[in-house]
Length: 118
Image (cartoon, rainbow, N blue to C red; front, side):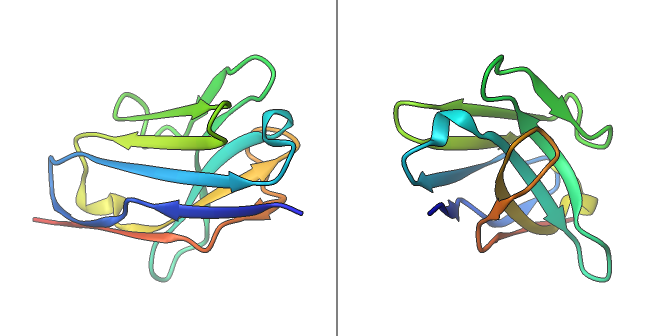
């Protein structure tokens, strides 16, 4: 059984930074790729960033490359998303997901709201 709990969302201004955290509850964290997805109002859920469990290679959506950084702490069963230079279009509910590979979500958290204002 896997449970994911996100935290760190909030209301920020454009250009600010925010760090999302996701706690993985289960015994096999180190064998999952960890991903962040987001869903803006009226839009489909989209992949944001992922980190491979074996190589720790990272993958990013073009829209966040150079601004967002995903990392993981296998000792603490946590994954993070550091978001810098936030834009209005980054406003969305952000979901943490564990999957058998990057870009895939087999288990999902409940989501955390990120709102970027001008």
